Image (tube, rainbow, N blue to C red; front, side):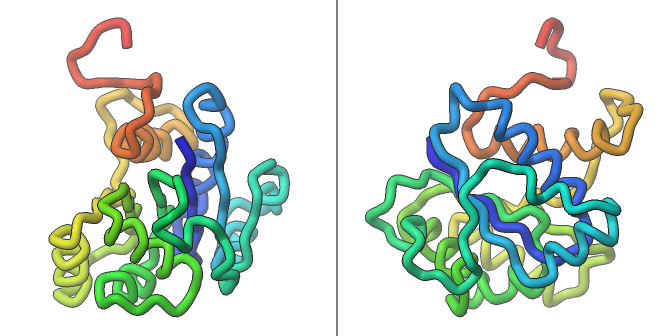
Length: 187
């Protein structure tokens, strides 16, 4: 499976970090991971996580305006685009068909080709515009997965809490992952 990841400047860099770490661990299921960063994604990562560890990931990086990226075309074999975290501005542009950068174009491709588009939205509270944009994206075939951690697994660390969301995202993308599953023993 080939997966594209887009990281926006929304708060929630820990979700992107844990997602990229887990994708590294899933080499037997994922043949390629490629990443697009928004202008503010690096700034928010540094502010929230206090480091520049985003540089350590071995994935190919694409400039946010490089429409030559393979996943900008329906002829590519990318099966999913995960936007994590997904800002409400990004969600709004996608929901209204505005393909003005690589992330919005790739999202448009995923929707038109009926492939997985998973938006890990990170905002609270939602206003009516946010809700309508989430509805429009869902009706078009996208998946809204709010960055809302669960506590069934009794997470002990910041990363454990983020993984409760990332695990769901990876499952939604079609990957088999280890982690807590409600009332399932031995998983």
